[in-house]
Length: 259
Ligand SMILES: Nc1ncnc2c1ncn2[C@@H]1O[C@H](COP(=O)(O)OP(=O)(O)OP(=O)(O)O)[C@@H](O)[C@H]1O
Image (cartoon, rainbow, N blue to C red):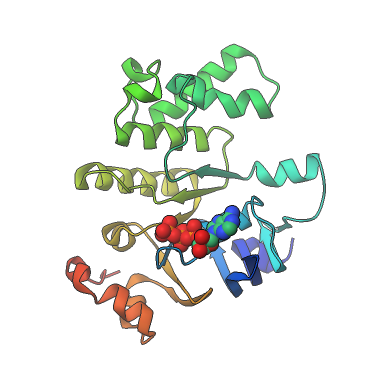
């Protein structure tokens, strides 16, 4: 593995993605460092989810290059591709738990699908992951309809962590949570980063999350990454969209971090 691949968890170069006549990502480049929490911001409909889904192979690219943990995501078939996919876990915007499965069964699901292991071991791993994200034993056998929004996000995160990924993709993880639950979730993500060495790629509109948990923030506008760096640098950006985003009416709460 070359030196750059050791430094970066995700490398996206000159990526073009579109639907019909619409070009959503227009020669976009972005590198995500190993072990960092990168926040991605952009206008609604600007292509954040499309970028995330293209990186994980759910949307085909028209051109460009994507590497995850040093592997070209398009190369290889069968086992080789599955091995690359096992390096990431995903938390989709709505949590996307299976409604007919309990919290514990939801977390067991990827273990059952991807690995050949006993029911007992699946159960032990699932409960360890649920504990890790702060779900109490009384709630392990509840169905998604019996969980609060914050609990649903935590269970979905536990499921994303089931296969011990190196990278987690989070699509608006704090949307719909009250500020206390959102702050707790931010803290959980930060703890997982430090204890597990996870790389976190987080799409978010949550200004507090960006300021508190993200090591760097990338701004997507006009199909490209127009600024990337620590929050204090983004606050200094001269790009018109970045200025409007961070210096608009909702941004009074933002104070540059001192570190
Ligand atoms: N499967 C698809 N087929 C056609 N167009 C799509 C598809 N997925 C996304 N798009 C279009 O791509 C554009 C970017 O969508 P995307 O969901 O990435 O936006 P976003 O930045 O995540 O927005 P939001 O912040 O509102 O979630 C939109 O115009 C959307 O309609």
